[in-house]
Each structure stands twice: as structure tokens, then as C-alpha cells.
Image (cartoon, rainbow, N blue to C red; front, top):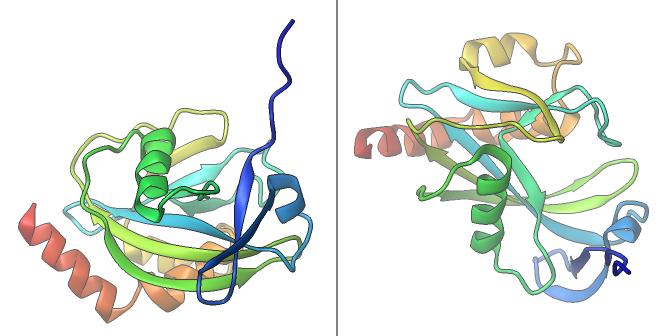
Length: 182
């Protein structure tokens, strides 16, 4: 007899990102008062193009929209960088990379509230995005992303994050430094 799978438990955090409790994933995704932490990794190639994934049509939230290369939940008791490394490996096969912390901000959708920890990296390694959560993935020139913002191509969270954080002089400077190092 097989054991039933247990539901993933996520940490609940305050506005400063401090863990104040925990809740099942399903509860976090249906109660906007439960702020839970996630990681986002923006992956650039040495030309400065940004890798994006197209969410599978089977996803409950924002199906078929292009989104951040790596995004995922931090498990209860898991460190942020451990979660980032785990998610990068699971989602795009990226291991042994140098993440740079960009910022942290709160995002609220119609169904949930997330504390998003944003990172960036540069790689010339081959990336693999073949799993049931991703329908497609590729590097996008920043000009192509800018031209597609507001046209229903991207998730609302990606558009906000790209416009207000990723497509800024500060991140361009950080990515430029990473490109020089690689």
C-alpha cells in the first residue's frame, strides 16, 4: 500500500521576511493574508539576453504566459539560497552558478501574497527546460521584451518585475560585471 503524498508546507513571513509560521501550499494559494516567500532568478547570457520560460497551459495561475526563468517556493525550514539553487536545477538544469541578490518585494495577486527574493546571474551553459510545468523557453533580447510588455505575452508579475527592477541601470551594471567575470 502506497503512502499518500503529504502537501508541501510553506513558511509564512512578515513584511520584513521573518518566518512567523507555516501553512500548506493550498492554503497559501487561496488566502491573500498568508505572505509566503519565493525566489526568482533572472538568467542572462553573455550577450545580455534574458532567458524566459513559457508557463504550461496546464498551470492554474497564468497558463501560457512567458515568465521569469526560475521561480519557486521556499520550503519551510529551507534557506533562500538553497531554494534558489534547487529551483534553478529543477526548472532549467542550471547548477554551479553565481547568483547576485537584486532586491526583495511583496507581490499580491487575486489569490495569494508572495515575498519575492530576486536574483540575477549570467551563464553560457546550456539550459534545459523540459518538464511538465514549462511549454517553451528561450533567450529574449531586451528590446523584444520591451516591445512585448503590455500585450498579454507575459505574466503581470514578470512585467512589473522587468519594468521596475530588471530593466534598470542598477541591474544592467550588475549584469555587465557578471558578463565581464565570465
